[in-house]
Length: 191
Image 1 (cartoon, rainbow, N blue to C red):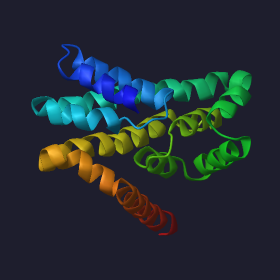
Image 2 (image 1 turned 60 degrees about the vertical axis):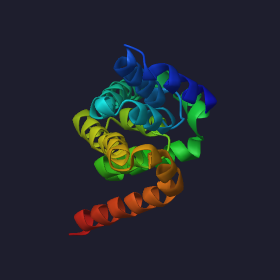
Image 3 (image 1 turned 180 degrees about the horizontal axis):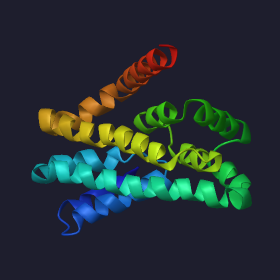
């Protein structure tokens, strides 16, 4: 976690700050299962004039990473699937996620994208099941957009207190959002 804070401190005054955010988001979405919030909130607090650009670049990096992750699942899962599953989860967990994507696709990807659950396994499973790429990307962009622009809104509203508020309420907010998505999901499925 300290590495991410150090990276954030270096990015604050860098002329490549926005591209650095996109790269960090790309890496977080594809490889590193550590929440990007550790970089984004302090960076947004330090560079409030670039608040929405930071959110947008985080979303761009995540979208590129999500597309690549889907591609890995779609094109190379048969060759490297066992190794990838061993790195990210268990075969049982992966099979459960694969079934959820098969049954609930869009809503499952949307809910995983908003919650602090590592997204990498959902990317691979979506690609491996051949879930519709455009629906997958739409769910990814909506869910991660809510996360990143929500952080921007948090910093916009609460300034330097945003980090403390986020830390105090992240579990409760994740539960609330997950329940809300579950309710919407249930209404749409059973109506």
